[in-house]
Image 1 (cartoon, one colour):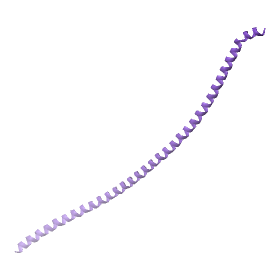
Image 2 (cartoon, rainbow, N blue to C red):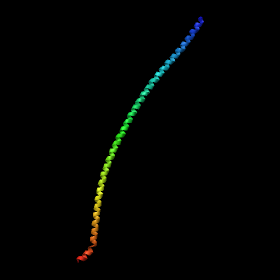
Image 3 (cartoon, helix red, strand yellow):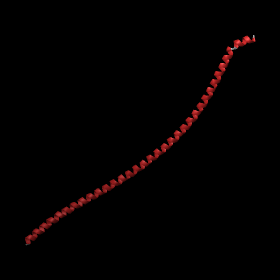
Image 4 (tube, rainbow, N blue to C red):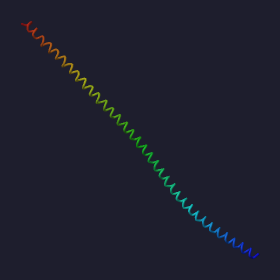
Length: 126
């Protein structure tokens, strides 16, 4: 019986060593998992910051596009108003030129008629 006890004690010692080694391996694994956890937390924080930054930039870009659209529409309206004003000025000037042209054509026709009739008038007055 004392040998059986010694054997059992040796078996228990060996089992304890195996459990001790296993516990050490679990401790190392837990430490590694804790390090991975911290690393993942840092990555998540970085990604959240990047997402927030991207959202901010996206909103800023949308705002700038809206502002530029408004500015461009205002500029187009101003250009259209100036174009209409210049068009009306050109139309008025062209109408005045056409009016003078017809006056000159009418005067030329009258002058030509009078010159053509000069011979007839000179015979009547002589």
